[in-house]
Length: 152
Image (cartoon, helix red, strand yellow):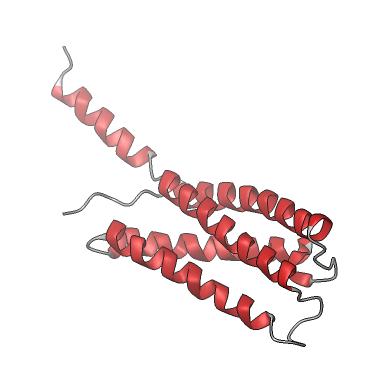
């Protein structure tokens, strides 16, 4: 039979261990996975859909930097919402898709003639697919390593 003291210790240990380093793990996992997926998307866009290899957003130095920055900013927003919102899950169900759609606006603007060298329809679609992929990967990592607390 388990004593109340040992049950309390187990509960306390589980609670304190779960969120420990959660943001760092979420950012690390999401960034690495997103960079790999974005590399595949860029490669396919250039090699299968004739997107110009000179289109900067499809080059590794650029998409790696923006992927890490986006994942880190997303984790910060996720952490703030899960800690401060009265209904974090409900708010995230609204904010995540809204922010994703807003992140696509500059991509559409790149399609304006002369806006960016190498901006073809295939290149911009690849960039938009990258945004969606990073969002899906990051949200999965945030849910795993920084879960929203259950609140009524």
